[in-house]
Amino acid sequence: EILDHPVTNAEYEAFVDATGHPAPWHWEGGRIPSGKEDHPVIFVNRTDVSAYLRWMTGKEGRIYRLPTSLEFEYAARGGLAGKDYPWGGEDANGRANCDAEGNRGFDRWKDYLKPARWGQKNGFGLYGMAGNVWQMTVDNHDPATTRYKYRITDLAEIENAVMGGSWARGPSYARCGCRLGISAGIRHPDVGFRPVRQPQGADWTVQSRKLTAMSLGGGKVLLSWALLGSDSRATRFNVYRAEERSHAGFRVSKEPISDSTTFVDSGLREGRRYQYHIRAVDKSGSEGRRSEWAGVTVTDQGTSTVVSFAP
Image 1 (tube, rainbow, N blue to C red):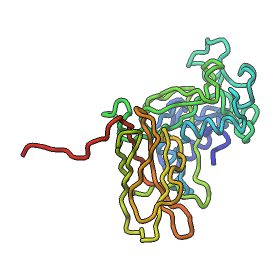
Image 2: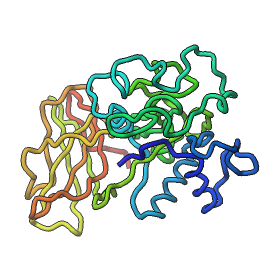
Image 3: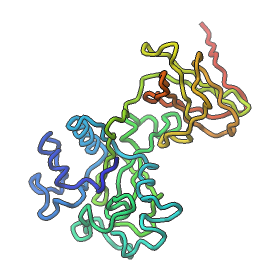
């Protein structure tokens, strides 16, 4: 479930009032600028947004988070395949709140920012998926390959992307798949956010089941995982593979694996990095929560599992 509009000033104000979190700096005296209650909240960074999402999660008892880049692109397309924009292939000028001339300064946000539900809805009933404000997404980076690893404390906050374009950017940035990298601490007058929410009955929590992946050479990868106290002899496992952690992946085990905690995936391309997770399967065939991710780069030779050292 994704919010049908970027979070508004009025919605963000409820969070500020309830928690004492600092208001965006452009709110005069800590209050929303007059007439901007229904406009997207701006001048917030990922730390602010993470606090808002934690508050909403605690308030409703359902997980709130930012969408992944792939989720945002899917939602933006609104069911249209192979099109550049949420409305189809036509140019964004006149259809999205963007900067056709390329001369809008950041200090002009009061003149150009539109209400969060401005314009036409897309095929999924969503407003503002192109133009008006950039919207924060997460890419679920693999820590082993993420740049600036020494800066990482929370992967959901550091060095992630924004999508959708904005009132201060040209039409090309409003394309469904366009994304830009942005650091966690930046607060811009053309960046907002919209959350996704855990559907009723769904379980988005991650099972703390350790999973390891090792290249065997020859286009093969060995996966091995831990058993938990809640597992029984009847517990089976499905294995999923993806090329990035923003994607749920595809099942690569033809049948649920029983009587084993290992799996060999084959036919993989050397030099490419793959991401894996597993899900336990109960007697009825229902899947449980996903495990933690494990990433591995396929090499032409197997990876050694023995490390020697001098005493």
